[in-house]
Picture 1: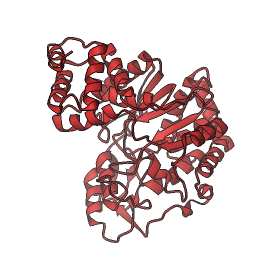
Picture 2 (picture 1 turned 30 degrees about the vertical axis):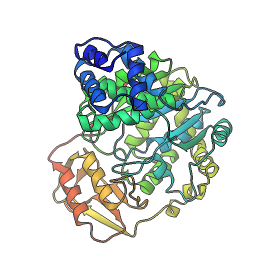
Picture 3 (picture 1 turned 180 degrees about the vertical axis):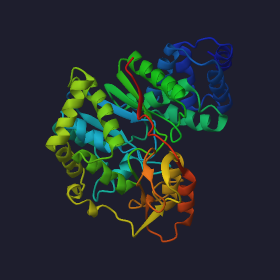
Length: 433
């Protein structure tokens, strides 16, 4: 088999066989196939697309390029959740204990953030003592006993995806549905999930800016998952503005606690219930989405979801007393209000620019080596569709430095006030097949 023949075949719009895809992935991972040939094939895929069978074979080839996590020792159906990312995306912090409170095993592998704010692990490390350095044995024991644990990402999961992503990034082939879908799904499948719930974001703060593109990606991933015997569902949700009010690590942990108490922001609470309902159905703990939602609402009302969050924190060395006293979380020295310059309705909050403002404070990383300041961030006081009077607070900045001129300028440039505005639709579509 020759790489040049595979490139020519895809360039001419023909389908690649499983053997050809396996040859490419194995050869490129080992370093036998040079970057220039891999780049040529990626560009051919970009222009000629892949059918469902090719996408499934590409996904499985990337899964098989490295280690896979065996979660078979955990009883029950293990459901993983993946978000395509956003600003103020606190869903995992709420979802993990919430669905675990219904007996659904949540064996979560998470990473650190590179961008606006920290990843799930960075946020959880706002709780003093919390750690994700667990042995596989301890991880499995915790999930079997208490239904929830979070571990750091293994270094050798899907090495083919890591190499290909770096190449796509410099060859203009990132925006390809088969390449994005197989990249995401390979990591979820390698991490040992039996079923997968996907939160595909759309809007200014999302990778997929339009609903049409988000739906195409969601359907591609659902078809890959179901095609390789992983029961998969997806939600297309709005990221035209940050989710919830908090953007920043400790601030988001506090917001997650509020949500588990039943006092969280309306949009975060709704999205968590929508995603959680899918996870509960996929795990076989409810017959349909309506029954699943009712069960989730019940464990929030009873306090069982919040109690599960405490157990989760304690099990991984965290100080669970922060749940009852969030002032024990890292605090910023300064709180600075950004006030509205005119009266009207908030008509736009550019999510990714608000994320950049939080990163300027130290809430996120520009490079892998950067240290995150866990106490800093932003708290939105108004969302799209809300009325605001001139002089009222739009955003509160939590900072460890007094001079936040640049951050304020970024916020003012990112929030528009108009004579009329209405709140955007939160859940655009639910995809189950």
